[in-house]
Image (tube, rainbow, N blue to C red; front, side):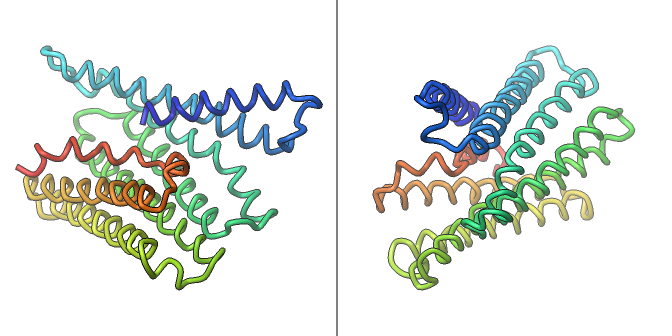
Length: 266
C-alpha cells in the first residue's frame, strides 16, 4: 500500500506542477478538476494515507520488539492511522459525487466508489474512536468493531471492483463482459470477492457467537486468500488483454495479503 500511495502522490505532484507551469496555466486540465482531483484527492488524500501507513509501520515495529507493548500504549497511534485512512477516502468523495451527479459519467463506477467511500470512512472513524478510548475491559468490544470495520472495508472493495465491470458493460454491452477473457475476468472478480466476503462473515460469526477462535482465524485466512487471488486474476487478465498500463487505476495492493496467510491456515 505504501509503494502504491507513493507512486500516486509523486505522479499527482508532477502533473500538478506541469499543469500550473503550462502556458497558459490549466490549458490542458480544467481548473476545478485540478483542485478537486489532483490536489485534494491526489496529493492531500495520498499524503494522509502515507502518514497513516507510516504510523502503522511504527506500531508494528513496536509490537514486534522483544519487550511486550500493550495496545494501551499505542492506541493513539492506531487511531491516528485509522483516521488518516478515513480522510484519504473522504478526499475522493467530492470528485466521485461530481462525476456521478453532475457529469453523469461512468455511473456504475462512481456508485461503487461512493458506496466504498461512505462505508469505509464511517467505519474507520468509528473504530478510531473506539480504539482511542480503549482499555482492557473493552478489549472484546473493540475487537468486534475492528472485525466489523474489516468486513465493511471488504464490502467496499467488492462494490468498487464489481461495479467497474458493470461500467464496462454500460459502455459496451452486457455480452462483452460475459464472453472470452473479459468474461473470465468478470466472473473471477465476482466469485473471488464474494467468497472472500462470505468467509469473513463466517469468521466473525465463529469468533464472536461460537467462541471458536482457531476456526475463526482459519476462515479469516481463507478470506484473505480469495481477496489476494482476485487481484492475481486481475493482473493476469490485464496482461492477457494488453491493459497493464491501467493496473494502477485499481487498488491492487491487497494482493500482498497472500504473504500473511500461511500462519493463519495452520
